[in-house]
Image (tube, rainbow, N blue to C red; front, side):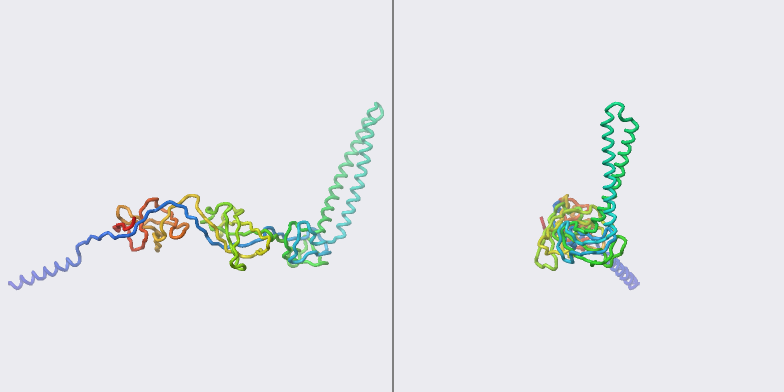
Length: 362
């Protein structure tokens, strides 16, 4: 009987030991030491590198305005031309004949108008003597003068129009530049309705002044001040740095690429840069209102997003943020965070919310 009681006691003791092992007594975790810092409000000036394209400041494709034959081509690819210089002479005999016919017709009707005007003025002078000229004759003379005047004006308009058409036979340069393309030769028939092989007769580009076109991402288009100084370089001229100023912006964001086109005027009188070159552009960006700034090491990148670890009442809190400009070891952040908040300077994803933290920093 005694052995039976001893066995029961042993079983109960073993069960109690197992129950204690399954539910250990809670152990209070000691606070961990981390370097803490403060969130500050500051402006970070930074720069971004973007690709750009160099384009001529002005470019024109020259097409014929009338049907005609090429008489002379006075320029070729690479020719430097000045504004108003004759580039191509066209010939169209029918246009010239129409012009001279219109000129002759205008001179004829203008002579009739001069004669009728003179007759009317003489009648007016004579009518001052009572009874010499009837009112009806005076009215008829005035009507004839007005009719001849209207006819002369119509013929003059026709004559001036044909004169302009005749002037189209002399193709001139609309601005100073360089001929970069030539697609016609003497004897060829050209005209507005005639398809020319190769495209326009000539292509003229202004190269002494260029446009540098840069597409600014939407995230930065409000950070680029007007007349901002920029620097850029091209791969064909290693070591050479070019400068310019932001001259104009599109004022809207492209819906497809989510960017805004910005242009920089470039002085190229030495002609070292060529239209069509690609450029690497460095753009300064800054915000109009100072954001919150934290050490870059305080930002944790995790699968759930980016956050900083704020310490309040000795406990860790995760605060979701978005990054902005970065400079040296500081980064702009946007989120539910304020100047003066205490944060972990060297944060990591092992610091869980609610963890007790003590400071080893300031």
